[in-house]
Image (tube, rainbow, N blue to C red; front, side):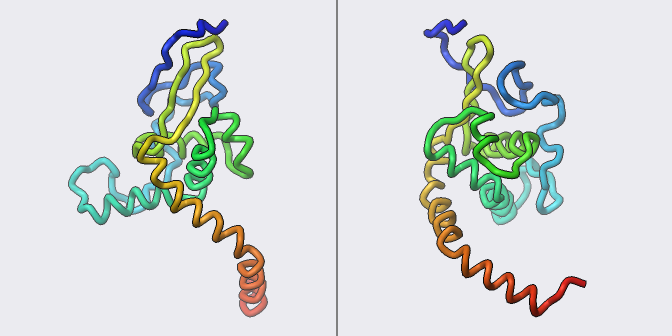
Amino acid sequence: MDPGNADPVREPSGSGEPSGSGEPSGSGEPSGSGEPSGSGEPSGSGSAPSACRAREVLQRVGDKWSMYVIDLLGQETKRFTELHRSIDGITARMLTVTLRGLERDGIVTRTIHPVIPPRVEYALTPMGLTLLDSIGQLVSWADSHLPEIGAAQADYDARHPAE
């Protein structure tokens, strides 16, 4: 039943997932599990120089899965299952890790609508929207250069046979 006028609840990324939200279960795992740490330093140390902190953020937004998520959410707000179906090759666990990281960095919001069953939606924040032009350019560049990249890879592979 949909109460219709109930306000959505924005939940911090570290909390558990509501049942029936369309997201994978097993959210009791720490949000950092399975997530590459990059420099090997704790990401929340607070004492890292700004260059290291910037590298951590660039590692997140430059990740192939993050780019797909940001590009898709730039088109419209989506539910977990919509994102999962739209990104070929991503596992549910990797999508969960990616969304949590983007939410932690302030790029994505997660909204839980108090309906039965619960509905969880993801959207870009105003800061996340500022990434769309850059990511859109990268996606367009990759699409337009696929034949050249394929030819370069075939040439390289011919010159360097697998050992």
